[in-house]
Structure formats: C-alpha cells, structure tokens
Image 1 (cartoon, rainbow, N blue to C red):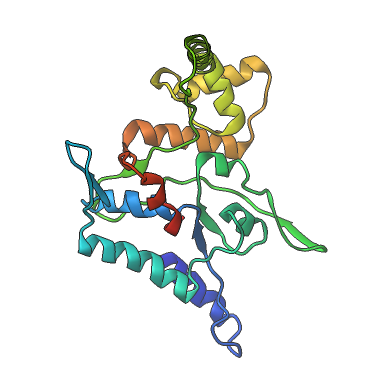
Image 2 (tube, rainbow, N blue to C red; image 1 turned 120 degrees about the vertical axis):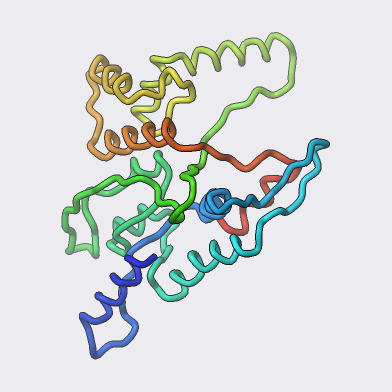
Length: 243
C-alpha cells in the first residue's frame, strides 16, 4: 500500500496543472482470499466451526479494521484499482503495474501492454512471493478447481474413482500442471525439478512466466502454512459479496 501511494503521488506530480490524475500501481483478483487469509495472518478467522457442525462469525474487530483499511483506503484514493474482470486484463492495458492472482491467472500475464490500436510496448515480468501483513505468520490460500463424484449407481461411482486415480497419477498430474498452471494435488508431484524433467521429456517448452510461477508457488506451499476457510452449510454465500 505504501509503494502504491508513492507511485500515485509520483504520477500525479508529472502533471502539476491537473490535480488527482495519479495512476494506480496495484490490483488483486480475489478480495475474498485477501480477507480470509489476511484475517488468519492477523490471528483471527471469519468463521468458527463448532464440534457439532454449527458455525458463527468470529472475526476480531481490530483485525477486520486493519483488513478494511488496507483494502478500502487505497482503492478509494486510487492507489489500487480494478477495471477489467481480472487484473491481468488491467495489466494488458497498462492500468496497473503489479497484481496478485492465482497460479493459473499468471498464465495470462501479458508480454506487452496495449494502450490503443496504434500503441503497444513490451514489458518484463517478475514473480514475487505473496505479501503478508508485517510481523505475522505467512499463511497462503489453498484453493483451486475440484472434481467430485455424484451419488448414482455403484458401477458409475467406481468408474469415476478409477478415472480420478488415473488423472492424479504423478506424471500425468505434473504434465497437467505444467500446461495449466494448476499446482499438483499430490505431495510427491509438488516438486519443481520433477515438473522440469517431465516437460523436457515431453519436448514441451514452458514460458518464463510459467516457470517462475510454478517454481515460486511450489516453494511457498512447501514452506508456508496453507489455509482454506472451513466448510459449512451455505459457505458459498459468504464469498460473493467481496470477490
């Protein structure tokens, strides 16, 4: 937030005759993840699940205030922004310089910025660790696309389980990760050197952004604490208002 404020003020000063025309530096794709992971870093959680399965809102007011100020203040002042559906779209138009997105979202990070039909210029990319609140334990979100088996007949359910086992086999899972940006689901496959070996064997070439993203993300999940909001009835309804 401090860097974004400085960037906004710097760009605003470039045109002293025009007030409040500074540019945003940063944007984030998922406000829901920021809120839930940020709360966990600050020693609190939004939802508490009881032993009997009951749930209650448990967020600490001071933690919520800090989360809100780090979100509301920079967006209102123009230090952060969100124009397109995803922040990678804002990056493509030069609306922002830095962003937080998923590993799959990083696969859409542009190699150039397009201002208009006649103006484009190349850009360099840099993949960095997800920021944490200062002085807190580094939690990161564990989230992604999932598969489930619907209750049907025994034969269909068995066939589905065989498919899932096949799909998540180490080598196949690694190849899927390299192509999609999704991280492997098994610990034995969550090794970047294994991903490199698999892609070399297949003759495929990973882009630099894909290499950097997978390498850093795998290092993070092996060195930080993973967290996901606990499941409870109507849990999906908690996220939409701030996604």
